[in-house]
Image (cartoon, rainbow, N blue to C red):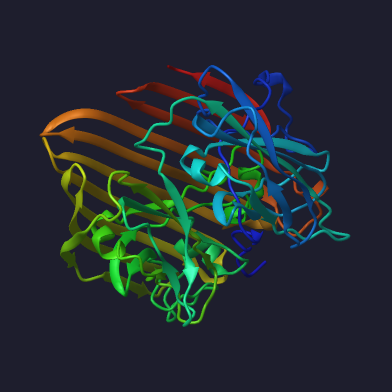
Length: 536
């Protein structure tokens, strides 16, 4: 084979999820010499969603079999026996698929609000089952009324790709007092203006606004693995104009309001090697978390009762090229004591966007990329409890080194993304500040050797540190470290029974902080779960 095997075969529309459960680990003697026709159900080391005690009610939201690109449509009805105030709402997807199928992307919308986005595992011929849970309490406002439901996991079923995606999605409502900090009063979606632009009309008494964007590069093109794209001058199969730097921006009335680094998701067909992901998916592959932007500094501007243009764009995508989906929800906290909360945007400082990719030719081609951007916005609102000021500062940085040989028989990437954010809220009493430092890493090499033996070695990291202070004193903190390592080899361009695939994978998920400790490590060999260790 002279050309690089496609790094991912994700296709379809858009959906979501988080914690997967499986059987206990096997003894070493049970591990086969190579992958067979069946393997362990998908499992991740991420923690399960905690559930409060007391009364709960379950509602089925969607029950569907996805064979093509026809959405499931139904109606959601609120639970009759659990009131309309909940301490927690938990979404759960249970899925099963057998045969042959690629990874697919999907979404779930209730009342137009996207509450869930995920990708799917690839099945064994004998079939797999998987489950995903997500805390969706922040969408409680949406769940209080009867709503239309739309769900789609775009799929292709024919004589070759036989896997039908059979899924069931439920919501479990736990009665209790909601947490006002994490439960907004309203959840809004964007409208469409007469000129075709996306618009937002907020309640006039909004005192806090947070936008969330489920940004995913997908659709079968190179934007599925945007982190591997190169400038047009480089001889590589995925070109993207300037290079691999991507940044998800949100604007209000044409003014930059938020910047963020997209998460470098590796789907379950990624890096040319599905044997890396059959049991343990990459971080967030089943739980596609939204990017969040604190838009509170713009509340005074938005609270005039008129529609305002709110648009999302992805920096780095060549003009006219598709491949990104960016649905937006806006979470709103209101001042119940006032019909109108006035305010003003007081500061807006956007740094110059740095985006540089340099190509070095040779027997081993190389592209080095550096990117960075800064944005600070500040504003105030005059609420019934006094003037509240909000300052949001965000700083992004990206570095990567991409190396490959002619024919792309060796293809390697080492990359780091950082996204630092500080939100300071001042009013009566000491100021409250939340500082979050996010780091994502990718270090991998795929090599096609003698006899078409394809070997992939890959390490992924998803890390974040958050610290809350009030008046300069620390009040809460957390540290997340989700690390994945894998190595898998198989014979390419032959039928499944001739691939002679072997592979080992490992995930360690650590979450420590003022609210406790969680630490779990999973290990697999040839599709068998051989280790499941908990340290907290």
